[in-house]
Image 1: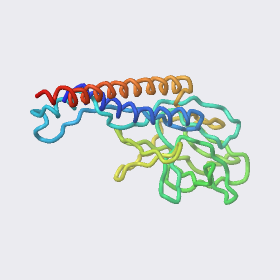
Image 2 (image 1 turned 135 degrees about the horizontal axis):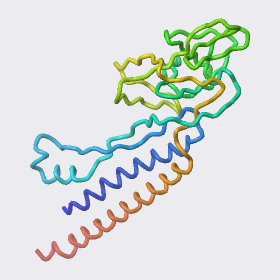
Image 3 (image 1 turned 180 degrees about the vertical axis):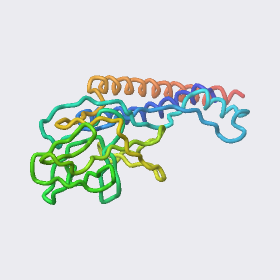
Length: 245
């Protein structure tokens, strides 16, 4: 079978998956703390004899979409005036406690809950550098660039910012929360800077996201047309040439 068919099929699968990713990125371009996903490609060996296999050589000549990875590029910081809204500049995530376990986010839209602790917009407790819930006593709060939360001049706790080993791929959960892989432990960092009274916006530009979506659509359509050409040619061979053999 013509290797062009495999090339077109591989391209169509890859562009269809990339189209889904581009659509998700664009849909969340206005979501605070959203990390855009970028596709990456890999080669694939189809077993121990793949190097000597015609199919193996064909597949490896054309990249397969390996999946998506989070982009850790910095998003723009938008001022809000709320002293408990926090934005991270640099690497790292806030750690929050949810009913499903620990989750990580760059969305620092925090407030003081009626129970007196610092929580996210949906009421999940934000954790300190020590992994504890953070009390916010009555009074005017302030947060330093190192994450130290103070009320009436007294430091209450340090808001945790956590990083992961290089190459760790977090799993998205919802729009802007992420799950760490099993067995991977985050570490607290002091290298990131916290900006109070601001929110980090998504690191996906709307204009670039729209352009990416259009490009992926056109590439997917091209691969689909190529498959149609090959399919038509195979049908011609089957109906016209093979009966003559």
